[in-house]
Image (cartoon, rainbow, N blue to C red):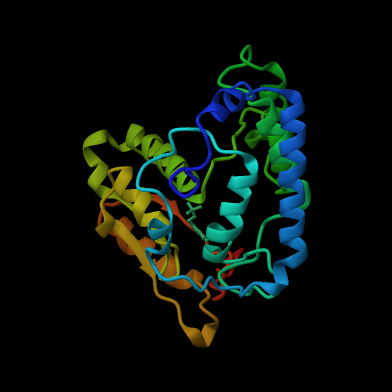
Length: 271
Ligand SMILES: Cc1ncc(COP(=O)(O)O)c(C=O)c1O
């Protein structure tokens, strides 16, 4: 980084910026990065799975402001090895057993390289027909794999997109459900929309509810117990919903736990 490598002369910057879309330079640097990551996988088991750094370690190592001049890939890879890898918790390590399984794969990483390489802006069909149509086709594949009814698919009357994060996905579905319900009960009744989950439901739901303008007190966290493996009881859910119906509240949204985390809060599906 520039303050660490002040010997790196400004004269190098013009040749570096000329490399912005230079295919040969891309090939050279791309090979170096793939080699770097391949070495990382090869040596993964040598690293402590949990990063050993202390909070705030990185700001002490980095310059206080952004570098003025581009730096060579060699310097960048050196910095990553020295400063970033020690601050990484190695989710891909075979010794990693926290939170949930790593979702990475070589196929996934290389797919990202391919799609990033094209740098497509796919906001409508004409801006990149292949991107739009590939999304249609593959979203339908995913819908079929999940066993969704035809009405959820592009080839039916539905369709969908993959959101960037779980929080975004929850927010989008919550907003869609909210607007559908408000069209029936009237926008002035937003305070009467009740939503359900268990006391194991991820806090992402309440975060999304706040953004969507729902009342957090209207979240019903159905109690679960260790003795029943944190299952959400269909009977408790039914009783809670019945009380809300009697109180004149509108049932908006239910988040069924499906057991990805270390605890296994499974609902008794089908009941
Ligand atoms: C069940 C569940 N919901 C929501 C989230 C939030 O995910 P993100 O930070 O990707 O939005 C997570 C993250 O692990 C999760 O496991």
